[in-house]
Image 1 (cartoon, rainbow, N blue to C red):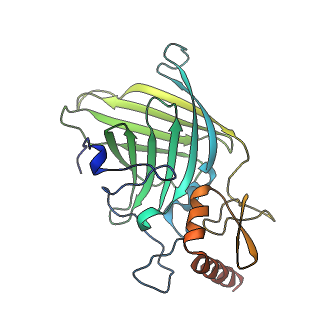
Image 2: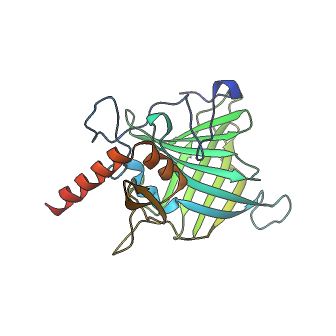
Amino acid sequence: MTHRTIGKAGLWLGGTCIVTGMLLAASQPQTSASADKPSVRTDSHPLQSFNPLIGSWRGVGQLKRGSQKGAWIEKATCEWSFENKQTSIVLKSDKGRQFENLALKWDQPNKQLLLLQTDGDTVHEYRGTMPDKWPDRIVLVSPPDADGVSRRCTIQQLSDIRATLLFEQQTSPSGSFRRVAGIGYTRSGEKLAEAGGNQRKCIVTGGLGTIPVSHKGETFYVCCQGCVQAFNDSPDEIISEYRASLTTKKK
């Protein structure tokens, strides 16, 4: 896989945060009765462990750690996306300086995490391994581009309300990775982490359900606008799979 820059006509990374038509298809949980219609529910999807990242965040970016020179403030929203039957966790930055969108996907054939960073017409592709647990840290690296530059992105969640992104680059194979910028995030608004105890669960992802959705007189809960869209697109299927999962857990 090589790094590439792609024009807007050939790629769109947006949606709830990012959707792309260029990358390898992510794994889909196959619990639907129809083989050509993958399930939307993510309870068994490899990305499900990243549910604690879902929500709204306030970020402070710094080019140099501890320095206010060139620093900025941004708002970011992290949501699930299921567009084109591809499961992603997507981060969209408002007034950010390192990216407009980030998309985290699972490359099932290669058993790797795949991250796409887009800023304007430029797209960087990173790959990394799934951590043993989360919250923790993941390190993703891009292959050298045409100029021999490799990039590294480190995503770390420190707690339910704090997370960081670190962007670095390496200009030669024998050189060290050097800091480009770091962003420290603090959660804004309501916590959207993994549900526990008697808390309401998202009917789509199993995360903390905070947004009510209704179908045929029944009310359920979802964790983000991406899951609202997924529920509205296939309510009967999602409700059926949700109830089937509850039956399975009771056995």
